[in-house]
Image 1 (tube, rainbow, N blue to C red):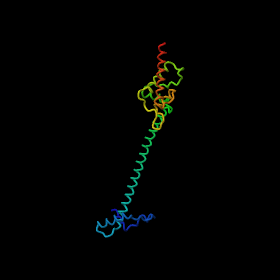
Image 2: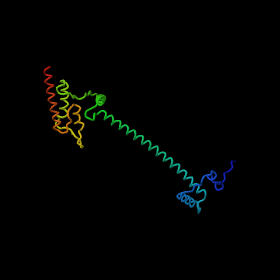
Image 3: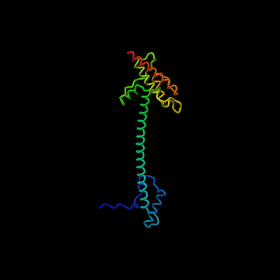
Image 4: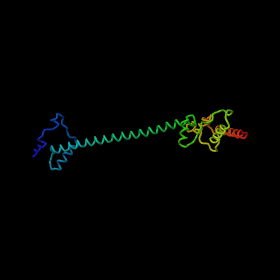
Length: 206
């Protein structure tokens, strides 16, 4: 038969044997040990009561470490997800800026993007002088001017800060001054009507 182990009070403190400093119970652990002794009908807690409380401290410490580790992992995952979302959003913003010319209209990349998404074959605005335009260029620019600035109710031409909106900035892409007032927008529309009239006259001659 295996030799029965000695009672704990007959064994040397393992920490002392290992050359480590003795650990003391916290006030809460002491109170718990006293309560355990009272439940067992003892006036004072014995070594076993104190050992139980010390063992509970170890298990709580392990549990606390596990919780902290899990919390760290969760925080890292959350940060990674947030970073991914931020990166995607910043990429979309950069792509949007690259597709839109800050001075007005679309860039070449923006026109290609429209072609991919909608099948639209957009071309750059006509910025030539009136005298240098072909009939087709007169038709294109005249149509744009009337469509954008000849409508009965115009979209806002300036924002709350007094800066031109994208609708107003489109005039720059067609070689026209950016309108900030309705009167300026109507002058561009009137020019468009004149270009369309010239186009129709040129077409009638052919």
